[in-house]
Length: 138
Image (cartoon, rainbow, N blue to C red; front, side):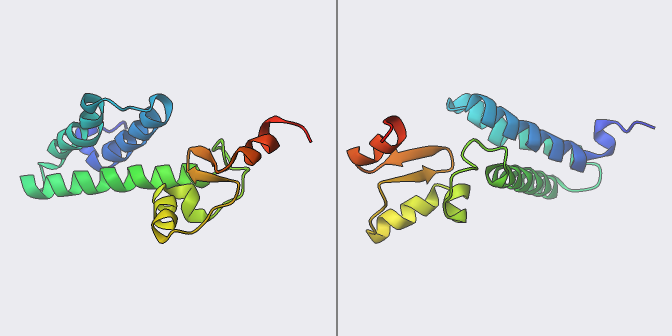
């Protein structure tokens, strides 16, 4: 027997978070309305599914907690998976997961190699010599 959306609000919230991750990954939302819709309005709407068994405050807490936990976990698992475009390049685990790793290194004032993965989605060249290895055959 198929369950309706209101019969299982937890799985609806999990599926919505996974779809949001796909939307972020595919189209890189940057405008404020899209971000607000995916990060604020959608979990708020999902909280209404929990109203049958919980108060409004509890429903909001459950919906936002489940939504953000699943969204963060799916992002981390994707960035560590072999399906990520930069998966074949070595680097520290925290550097693959978040750009905060580079911020922490920069705040400490440590030097970096010629080129490095500056965030989970980009590479950064630290000198003109490093570009030679990528673009010119030796």
